[in-house]
Length: 387
Ligand code: PSV
Ligand code: MN
Image 1 (cartoon, rainbow, N blue to C red):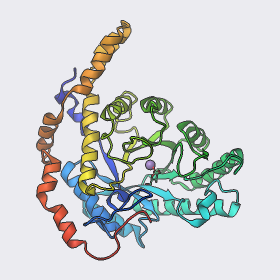
Image 2: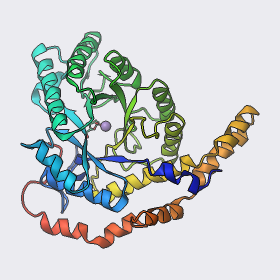
Image 3: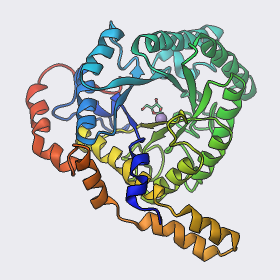
């Protein structure tokens, strides 16, 4: 087993991007609960993201969602974030909330709607130029509800055309990541339902087009770490949207539902070079905090990723290799489980202290008064949310 000391340098390479929308109100189709202290502005979301980074040292960037995070001057927002120790990260394009997109966006049968969706993405790239963001993330709600409703093959062609127009606009340092999701909001077919479709579409674009893997976007029982291994092998794993699911796209705190799955994913990330500084893999969260406090919800999330990364780094790969070579199934499994069962919490607490961070970021947040402060300050105005 590797020692914690021998992997602590690698742990320092972990950076997690938080989503601006995690700080806004969210919910289900039954109810969106408001909560005291919820940001009213993009700047207040950035303030909350900065708090997460301050308490954990793990979250130096915040992703934006356009138009949810529309401001007049993105250079100003960039400076605002910088002054708080943050950089603006991935720009997520939203082509799912306009009435025009009822039957699709980049895959709509009407060329005028497809053009509108392309234009929105081009506007997002303009924003990336101002924010200094590297990645444009495209997720489409596109699909159909009934067999026969749409030409599922033509829609792939329209998708390819639209993505090509967007890709062409990217700067040399910018990338497009295409996120897949197997269902919802469309139920019969989704235009980008799986990693294979995303891979086919991005491969046709060029080297700076990659797949985004949202952990919540798979059927129950899917072996996600296999997809991770495959995409890394193909050089096309652009980013993660981390979250937890019990049933569908639950968007719960990463590592909450199935910490072992998160561990297995991180093992394959490390095995495939995804944690190396030049890998280009973005570790983002895509979560909602419907009933819990949002800032500590995000703190808990980044800590969960850190904890499972530490355990995955501790995997004794030599012993594993030996057991595999000898065909010793149970020994190989035992080596794997040893790493998973290693409690790294005490060691991580010391590791944080060595870096001037609070040993227990959750407690430090609770004691800091930040929550009480935002609840007292953020009175009046419209709380940020999904629309
Ligand atoms: C869609 O379910 C998704 O995972 C995409 O990443 C969206 O941008 C995000 O959720 C919106 O919350
Ligand atoms: Mn997502």
